[in-house]
Amino acid sequence: MSNFGAYLKTKSFRNTILLAIGSVIVVVLIAFYSLGYYTRHGSGIPVPKVTGMPIDKALSTLKDQNFGVSIDSVYVADEAPGTVVEQDPDAGTNVKENRVIYLKIVKNEAPPVALPDIIDAPYISAVATISNYGLKVGDTTYKPDIARNHVLEVKFGGQPITAGTKLPKGSKLDLVLGDGAGASEVDIPDLVNQDLDAARFVIKNSGLTLGTITYEGTITDSTNVVVVAQMPAKTDSLSKTSIGTRINLTVTQGKKTP
Image 1 (cartoon, rainbow, N blue to C red):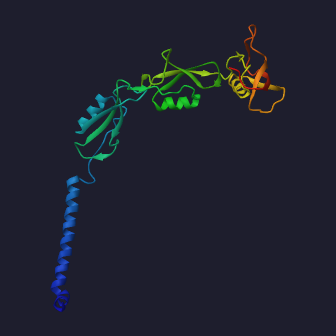
Image 2: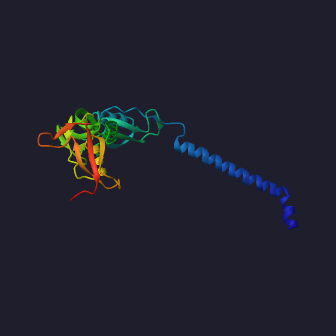
Image 3: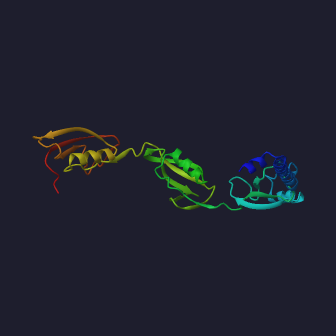
């Protein structure tokens, strides 16, 4: 061990270390400058701008400057088929000769998309969904319905269509919306012999209003009462009433009779 320690202090050892370090530095420098020369670091030719050009003109421009070309296609609404809409590398980028330039051009035909289910959706939500599917909103019309600005029907080319129907991407859809008013009159429900809770439910869902409730006789169990009379009542001469009409009920102790 003492001999090895003495060797580490000799001039020969120091020279060996310096020689090794110098060799590493020389190898690194040779590799660096060789790589720069091989890749032509800092040199090249700028890529011309071909976006917005017809594909024929773009190909001619690139091939005149000895670039290779790879083409992919994508559908873009409101763009002429065959137009270059994207290039990689970007225009102005310095690249080596014979570099492949990747182009995207507009397809001739729109791909089909399935109509999403937007029935009963609010208008704003329906428009966003349609847009996300690559479709557009055309005309909007209204018809009586209490669901204001909710989609009641979707039409394409004047014909009603349902969710899942395949359409060309970019197609315009016409929407039929509720006007919020609904029909001015609704049918008078027949509530006699109905449980009170059931009568309340029917009145609410008919667009009517619950009026006064008159109790006949002694009521010992409020969960078991039935309707014995209503005003207005449905008759042969009166079957409809205005939306929001108050329906007054007379109830008594008992259960619904089959």
